[in-house]
Image 1: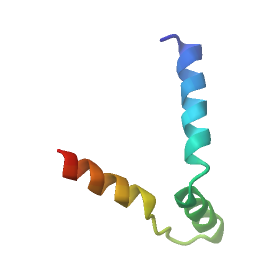
Image 2: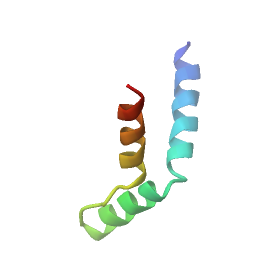
Image 3: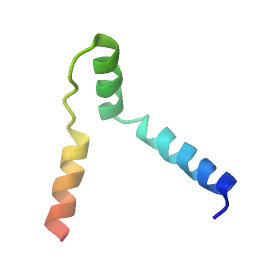
Length: 52
């Protein structure tokens, strides 16, 4: 994979992540200078542990 391809893949991955509720929580927490409460990532971690 070239550097240009890697940058494009990263841009696509970030665009997907920015569509999640967790991203909105993180953004709002950053703007409001508070701690975010993530939910979607916790569910993904649990699923990964269940399949291990």
